Length: 398
Image (cartoon, rainbow, N blue to C red; front, side, top):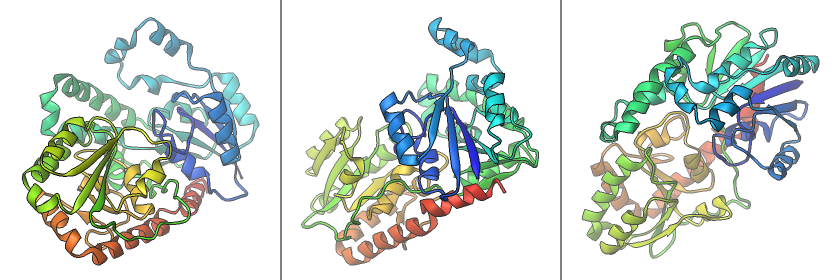
């Protein structure tokens, strides 16, 4: 089977200036009889050396596409403000030159795979082929959820950006082609439901997000002593900010109950003030802004705490933690679309009271939570296995 992938960003094993890891891990363990040729605009600007590495790792050929002339001039002349007056997101107006379209058609692929929310006009250039359009998220759902959060109204630039972008993505998704020859693949159940509401009759399918790299050999799950090693992975950005502030404010005030049981590491930028405050409360705290091997650092810890306040799709850092043997404690948005069950294979919480109860209980029932982490890892390998998910994606072309 021969598939041509047309993508706005070049796949990579980790997210590099965009959601480049999803297509990579959908391909890395694909069936051996599936040939994939990649055409990429390289919007995430991978170097030539890195592209060659990806070609070898995935056993693919990557051909770089030229950036449209109008987009190049828009950047050079600082004309990006014109997107305010466009009906749809700017990148949605991208199309392939006819010469490249004819060259792809001459390859006689069994299917055309398009990656990226804004690439729908490119997909329409191959109407005679079976197509799968992979969307990391339903972007209109993301903006809808953002506009429902109080913290958005505290930043007027953020507020107006969401107000302007929400209708643009609604229009774009509303005119996605909904013929029987194109199927849409998303990694969020709510994303699929939202897209179907925006565009009735569309062939939208939910597939679990494949897990990323797993360190070998697998770690033996045994929580550290005398203190449990708790990890907060990721930047302190708008996705985490609201829930994180509430959670760490609670931990500051409840330090007498928690500080003797946990050693906390922040892996990412933007946590400096939180680190200082927790240290002042008596916690053992460290911050790491960069590590050469992310997975190797993650597996040194026992528990990952993920207080995400907003989002769509599936959270890759949660998959990383679960698949590498950590117990995940997180909000509903952190655990959304992941095949784990609260109290069985993860710890979910809806309030600071529930979070405090969990963090207080874990040190006193370590064996129970170690077993929970083991079940979480097993669930990811079964339900989010890369070989399994890759086959499901290939089946969408049939």
